[in-house]
Amino acid sequence: MTGIGSSSISRLEKGARSLDDFEVAFILGLIKATPREFSDAMTLAGLAASNTCTLRHPARFPDQVGPLLAIEEQAARATIFEPAGVPDLLQTDPYIRAELSALDIPARDHESLLEARKLRQRRFSILNHIPATFYLHEHGLRRHPGEASAMRDQLLQLTFMASTLQCQIRIVPADIPVPATPGQVGLFEDSELPTLARTTTTFATIFSQNESEVRYYCEEFKKLKNHALDADESIAWMTTLADDLQPLTVD
Image (cartoon, rainbow, N blue to C red; front, side):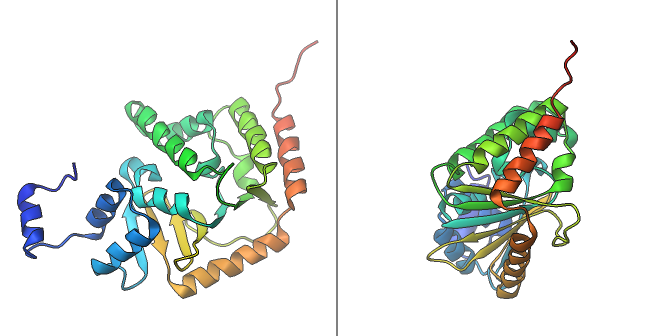
């Protein structure tokens, strides 16, 4: 089940072998560890001395990283900046499929990866669970990986999500300076744990509770809050862009 042989487990029990960070995180994911259990286990394993943990992505898609699910599911509040498109937690099925194709992931893996992402979205339960604010960059929304119709439907879904009490979407205009990040950045707040910063790239997710790093992103999110369109303006902007993608009709 764990992919670790019985002889290796025996050596672990005797203290003759240690686990690397990926193995620890993988096992924590299998048992659906809570954020506190994840933090405690990483500390006991001697991996949290720097308050940073890097988890590699199976198949270049982050959705199968177990601790990621636990953190998203149990945070008290989330703030996420997506510079390159639609955040994975808000994507429609056609958008996910287009993204999978754009990453040149084998077609045989598409369905399992699609289901993994949909599971994350269901467990995050953004309509009924934690308050979340998403900052989406204009450039990312004007570039879409698939057909214009799929992007139009995605934009309409975003406007619906933005109309709910738990989800706020703020559009960052193209001329506004944004944080230089290697990918999506999120801050996850928890009543029992320090705020956690998460950076997602194609090949890995980096979790950090380093105070200076968390403080840096807190300040950057304050700047985005001041310069981004407000909630109503963002809904209007997305609606206009969706209308622009509407196919022309011939009389």
